[in-house]
Image 1 (cartoon, helix red, strand yellow):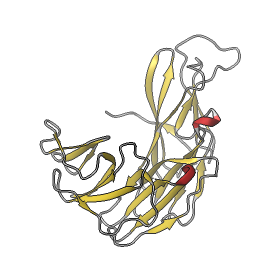
Image 2 (cartoon, rainbow, N blue to C red):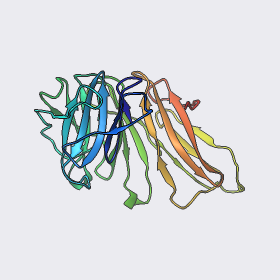
Image 3 (cartoon, rainbow, N blue to C red):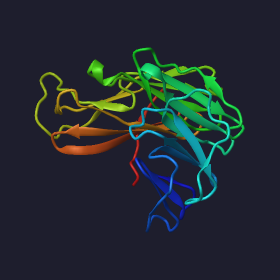
Image 4 (cartoon, rainbow, N blue to C red):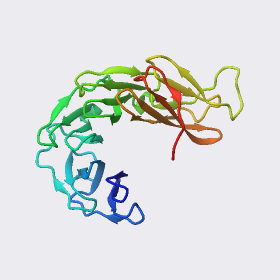
Length: 265
């Protein structure tokens, strides 16, 4: 979901719905496309990624509207780099970031600073064997990015990168399963209900693991939410013999150290 205000917002994927009463009722939006991709809001402005194909394997087109339930208009100037939209972030009404899945799964990053009248490409720090899974924008030039391995590799190792100059240069902040949780069975330890343990390593992020092994290769990707230029919160789902629960960790020093954080619903 993406809300413009406390009363007006959108729910999307694979269709598009809008509410004007705080989510009490929803109506289907009439769209010029059969499949809805990411939706991002900035103030009263909403951008919607739409696909002309039903499987999302065709280039996305960006549409815009100024009110929930308002008519969707095709953005006059589309990004020159095309592909399916993995993430769309709008830290301001003028600045938008699009993370695209290009040919052969290679990620591409494009941005606009004039509300879509012009676009520029930015480098993506992910290695060739990894894809960009998540993007968060703390401000017009401050971004956090997670690069992850592919399912074919049998795991989802994650690496967190950060930029403070609008994607022109990236710094690796954390590695070792950043943004995800891996279940392991340490030697000499058994039984269910063991506590979650955390391994703090400066500039290497965090690794959470369970004493009780879940299903084989049970990896689940979490997310990173920015909290200012040097702050972020990472959330992950933990699968154990006792069920599923969520854990959160917070950094205030650009990923040099992480501490357990309270989850709010």
